[in-house]
Image 1 (cartoon, rainbow, N blue to C red):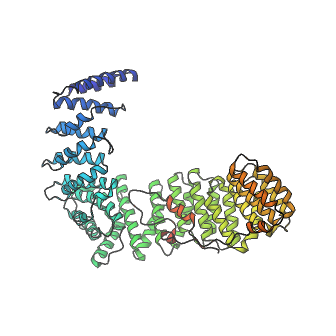
Image 2: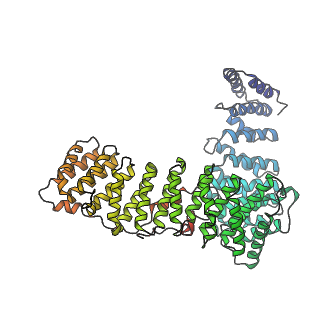
Image 3: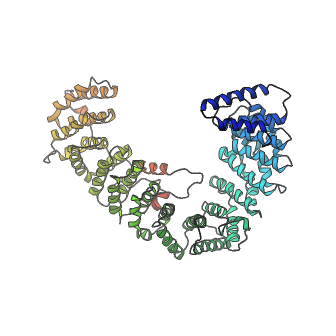
Length: 633
């Protein structure tokens, strides 16, 4: 490229431009010249390459390029390597999977994939991986697969073919037929570790979607790990700061987590030897940060795999000890990974007492300076919470909620609400905690939280008077949040009569407490309160004039929903007999058992990465929590 003096001079001119206006003037002049040159049908390949290079440099600087694409496509068909290289670079930068010219390059790419020149193969594979798309996947995936499995392909071509096929699979899953499974898995036995590393990435993605088809990879992965770690069958080129090929180790250890433990005694024994070896190596002194990072990456994947296959108590005690050290580490990354892995252990373990021994350290993680560590600490507390420590953990979470980052408050509210319901041993503690949660979190309380609380109050008759009385006290306070008004309006409308004879809870006091908040509420909450008022008409005839006055006032509302409700309720309250009113305002029946909407919110919030998780946050019950949380206590 240094021989293209015109390109070198153009780049120098742009670098020497002291103002953007000068740069724009020079670019417009050059683009006009290139446009004119492209009209010449006798333009040589060298000249096309030079002008396309100039267009690419202009594009990289952030300027729009609306011509030259066809010339770049023509360069791909050249027999000169440098011209072909620039052509592929241009389509990788200028074209996307939906570009109109994609169909024009498919035949040229296929020709280069089938060419005997490995360099041409690699250029074509680069272009496919960069552009991707459904059309390329449907047209070229079989050619990429042929390069991957061919015994004539060089190792560096196989590596690129495996990663290109992975890229196409992520864009369009149907490009990898089921009958390819055995041939792809067989390449995991390739003598070249670079090829095995690339193919392992491909198999890892495929096994997540079709584990049965790729089940043969399990034994191969175990024996490859044993060969690398115990037998030391690894070339010096793949030693990274005395750690043998950590990238391949991590992929294979993660791949094994998508399958149940093997029934083959040789495979199971080999895997235990590998895990024991990795845990023992960690005790050796580390020389530098790079070695520490590589070794810890392998260690955490090994721990996750050990948790997955449920190793014996001796090995598990060693794992818990190491995790306890990690969550107290001064390094943020180690604290993060330690908390995440301990949450995995909590999701699988039958006995959580070893984890609860570190409860004080885990609670301190809520005040970590790094928000990602705070999130993981919250997930772990959620997973390790039980009847024995629910009051302590929920109390600490409520204290922290008052000063928590806004970014995690909604997630905290949902988790606190679930833990309160799931592990409550007293009905009054549940109501006190939920109402305190609403009063602290305020606008971060989603509708699912207060609606779930209403369901539980309705389904527990002994809880109804206490809930109504407590809610009324909150509503009488000077500060409030709309979620408190919603749940208060609903519960008082249903069960306000149960406390009407209590001092400070008379019908008029209930009405005034709600009406005091009415004016500043949203239209949705006002509609709910109007429904509460028509129930008050049925329950408390003595305050009927005040309620009818509210209906009169909102019968002229500009909001159609409020106007319709007010008019209908006004007519209903003015009927000569109360028969229809009593029928309409009959008490709500108990709710049927149903899956908690809060649980589905938790599962939705678990991030979706390229690699699918094999466990769910929320303890052992969170792994298969499709049934409802217990109705009642």
